[in-house]
Image (cartoon, rainbow, N blue to C red; front, side, top):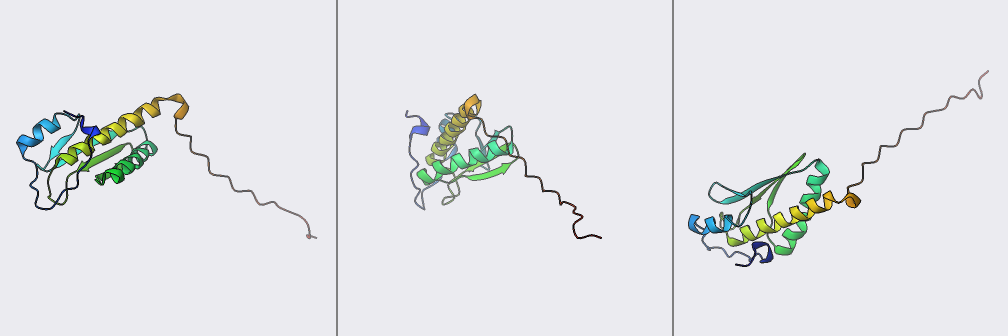
Length: 142
């Protein structure tokens, strides 16, 4: 079977039935850490060392989502990104949801490798410039 991350997301047509449990099980087995929520959504949380890494991950997901035409719901907070995938048009799961999940895992693995590289660490935030102090002058005083 072709790796899920190498497949393309296929647009869903209305009226297509969502995948049933027997179809979901083998696809879910190809992913790591993803769970089924409400029998119709794929969900996974990714942990990060800080907010900047979490937002960088979200930004990396957006490029893949646009290319695939399949957009996850993303919940971002300090140190965590939670991803929700389902096909809104049919209010359930399609194979494309599993393909997108695998692509997101690939993005995460790529970001993790980059973060581990000492040359490509995120720059430290610059300190805010301090305000110049007003000078006291004695000019013009008697």
